[in-house]
Every structure is written in C-alpha cells, then in structure tokens.
Image (cartoon, rainbow, N blue to C red):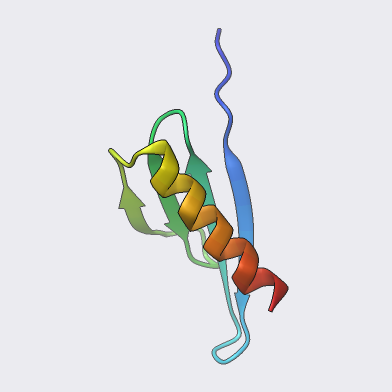
Length: 65
C-alpha cells in the first residue's frame, strides 16, 4: 500500500461564523472543500502541483490575517 501526502487546512470565516475544511493533494492534483457539516461543496481535479502550492500559500495567508 502506498500512502499519498494530503494537506488539511481548517478555515474559519468570521463574518458568517462558518468553518471550512480544505484538503489538497499535490500528487493527485486534487482540491476538496467541505463545509462545517462535512458536505463536499467544491472538488477540483487535474490541477498542476504549482497550482496546488499557490492555493495553499493563499490559504496560509488568509489564516495568518
């Protein structure tokens, strides 16, 4: 069994008191966004590694702000 790296981010939106969970997988080129109830609200596949890294940097900047 081969394990693939998955990054998980939790994003809290203060204006609406919403919590989002973001899972990215640079190896698979996938991005998944879940709402606070665990419902999949966005799924993207076929992304390049550089696109995943750009999204992760933007998420980190949002979290730090």
